[in-house]
Length: 162
View 1 (cartoon, helix red, strand yellow):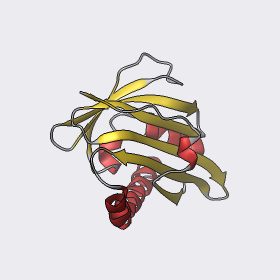
View 2 (view 1 turned 90 degrees about the vertical axis):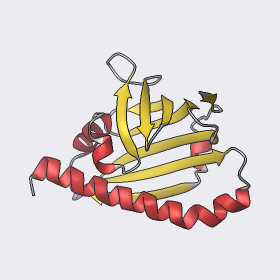
View 3 (view 1 turned 90 degrees about the horizontal axis):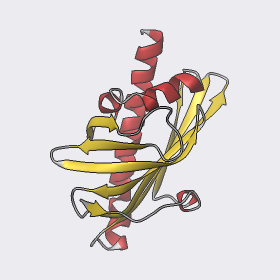
């Protein structure tokens, strides 16, 4: 495993990408989906498996292991946990030397028709120039948007049986 650098919440104010989606479920229902290890592969196309590696209750410092695609594994540590409102994690290490830093931030806010999820991703790759990251940003943004649409569909199906 290759170590990834630390991330604090201040750095998450300057993410590489951010996207949002309105979802017609309650904030606690959406948070329940984000806590559900089996739900992640159903809406996030890159993830094949999630395993919580910390005992309950989940909170700040909670850890999990995520398998992404074929053969890529990341260990994560939660750097923010505000039940029904926000969770953020960083990669502590990963199986390939891809990231110097990687973190994600999920913020949930109530709206009239359910909740809004704002998903931010902070990526600092290893050995890739920042200029290349900027060039690929539109493709990464499309992928983020696609997965948010899948999450919306999954949440509606899970809670409304549409």
